[in-house]
Amino acid sequence: MRGAELREFHRDMLSLWGAEGGESYPQAATQLTLYTRRTVLDVAMLLRDSDIARCVRTYLLDAEEDLRAGYASLEHRVTRVESCLAGVGTALQELGPVLNRMSHRLDSLDRRLDVTHQVVGAMSVRLGHMSEDIVRIDGRMDELARNLKDLNRRGSKQR
Image (cartoon, rainbow, N blue to C red; front, side, top):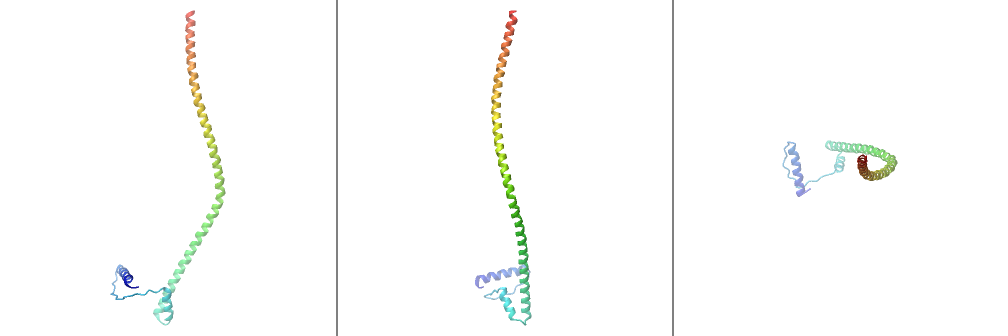
């Protein structure tokens, strides 16, 4: 890293050390090289007799082992999820025909309900006509009752 990237890196590192309460020493580096784990491990393997190289190798191998354990755990969880999804797929396949039958039954009930609605509507219309007929008959009955009263009065007057 050089220039602005290096300054940003220094600023980030100083802020991290400042957050831990530690003091930073002035660094006059004008460039910084970053190495991958594999590169550092390769260099540590070259320095076989050094205690520091041995510590670096141990640290990197332990870190790699932890990373692989995390992958294995993730793989196990993914496998469990996939097996559950397989069960869901089977359940959905079994549920399909049941939903199809229910759909046909609901369609049949819907048709019956439409027919019932039409019958009730027709009955309502007929009751409305009957109500009109009853009102008309009631009016005739009232007229007949008046005519009978008039006839009774005339008959009693003639006697």
